[in-house]
Image (tube, one colour):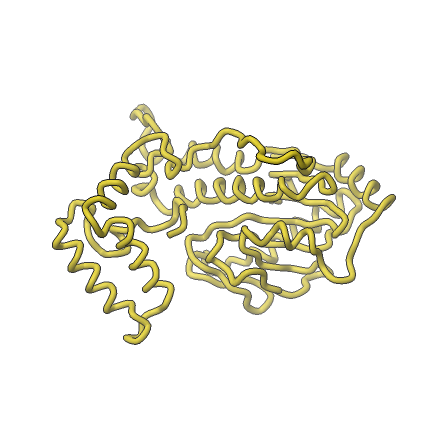
Length: 300
């Protein structure tokens, strides 16, 4: 089950209250297994979710661990900002600037304060019990922040041949990440819509997307705005989603001269290292593009 502020809790997946008895929980599990089984017309994804939910709360021991973890502040599932991780190797990291996730985290803190109420105490704004009760619009801000941070950690392993910028202003919008290296200039948006997405007709579709939403088009337009300001041309635009929310790396198509792709988070580093066939930036050109971007980039 994805560790996301938008993920349903195992109790929600099984359709019971967290206060349900063990017998009620067992009956709910059997009911949901029958309802979601692919042989009975259910979906494989829903069937798998039910099994993972049961693994988390199906026994008194596992349920006690899950409930205790969900109620304890400071646990990793609380989605609080994490301290920088110590590197386990001696390879040089990609050069990086900007604050990934910072813009969304500040918006989340503002909105959760407004939702709880001014003057009311919030001991821990990242407490899972609080986050689970928050409206979807509030939780989605935290999910976006976590998604950006996780992608930034991955991109940092690209190595010294790449330069990264995070949370960059692009006209009225923003680009979550820009990566420049031998394989080209990449615009990347990190997203977590709480459900799988798939390419269709040059953009994405999925249950978590807002009606009429066109994230690929918006990313390409933002990249072109920044490209015009910096006098550079982007090679590709990539939408990065949590693992399990896409089918590996998928080709969306070309839009206004920009290759567009959908990628699971664990595949994005390999994608950028491998690049797009026939596209490369070398030597003097790479230095020139970096210099132009450095002069044009503004952080939000």
